[in-house]
Picture (cartoon, rainbow, N blue to C red):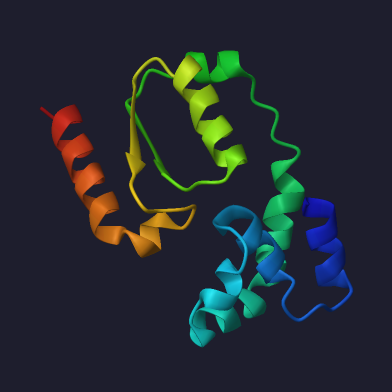
Length: 131
């Protein structure tokens, strides 16, 4: 997926950003976005391509996460893609001090589609950990 995304960008595909957005958010997520958001994605795609290139050099092991003691809030949408669900489930198995939440009706872009729900989860989490 990432190689095809990068190749589409370098080939000048106008809506190459739609590839990554549809991967995380589901088919036609990019086309469903407002024009201004799609334009922003087109204008900033190079930064996202670079993010993907560097992401593959990150080599943390599960034991590295197990050594983290700070509180962690893991949140995903109920309609997240299988990769995001697997990432969250793996982190749940090794983070010693975590809380997990699933936002009903949301996909990968839950912080924009369900901002109120996300804010409430974060506020509750921060209240719990600062007692």
